[in-house]
Amino acid sequence: MNYSLAEKKPNQKAAYKPDLNELLSQCELNYWLLARLMPNLVTLNDQSEKAELLQSQWQVASSAVQLKFQITDLAKYTTTMTLTIDSPRLKITREMQLIIRLYHDVKMMEVMEGSGPGALKAVYEKINGNTKPVDEKRQINRFLGESLRACLPGND
Image (cartoon, rainbow, N blue to C red; front, side, top):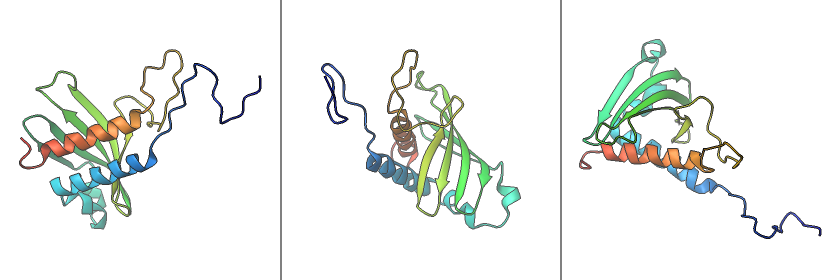
């Protein structure tokens, strides 16, 4: 039996295809939410005192979540930060660290790395021993948006 690329074998699940528009929309929303929370943070690339800004820290919090931002790299169009998310009320998300990057020219913010080492892939293959969900990048960017939204005034 000969299969073409478009055909799938019996009892075979279709491969997961990431929705790029959804991911990009979430990254735009994340940037917008951060700009509402901390307007000065998204304009850092315009300031000339780069050395003073590196290792700078900011913090926002609500009754549900606390976010701590630390700048690790500052370039003309991007800012890279370590984000620590702490949720004392929820045991599931004790403390999580994310490496996030702001793209100021396109007004997007993306999670680059999760709590473990290595950049997040858009899609993970389901192989034996791989416990990551196939859409981890989408999920972690959505979680970032929900955490930012929780810190907006009036969302307590």
